Image (cartoon, rainbow, N blue to C red; front, side):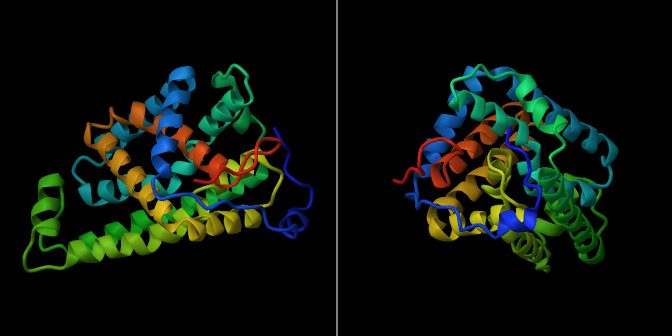
Length: 268
């Protein structure tokens, strides 16, 4: 795996990486390739998915009567998902290189303790924590009644005709999620694949979003929808959804930025 540059400031001063524009329907191809990777090497994916599902179930058990925390934590998962999927990017990279992929490829990413991945992961974790706290404060402060369970959330927040709380909650979530998505959508696989600094990875990710806004809007919707389905099935769906989307996200990076030592970015 490429090592982090000794001087990240110098790495960030390099010329901008080439970014391809892709058609609005390209996320469907990423999903197809991600599923193919999952089928070719299911072990790492199932391990990642099972850990996420177990963590989600543990969170539900701990916050069983504190749904005002749980709803923020579940939606905040989308902000930190690029970190969770890092091992899956390594698995897909191995498959792209014609190697047999195993859980060892995923574990090796974290054993390397790459400071760039750690720093960026901490930034995403801070963003996720910020949203959980913001969501909890908004719901507990403005809901007409205590929000102890899903039924309370639906009745007092989503369907309450005398309140705009749900709209405000969605708006604040979007305001936070949009820049985080733009900063991270290809940044994490780029940091894994190339010896660039965090700033270069983030700026490249923003250029990818601005260059293909329709495709990236569809991709953000697909990510949110499938993760929501995974959580809505008592977290069990995450066993499949997490690896599927993790592998697909690697192919989004490959399409838009390309891989080190690989083919040029592919358009269309």
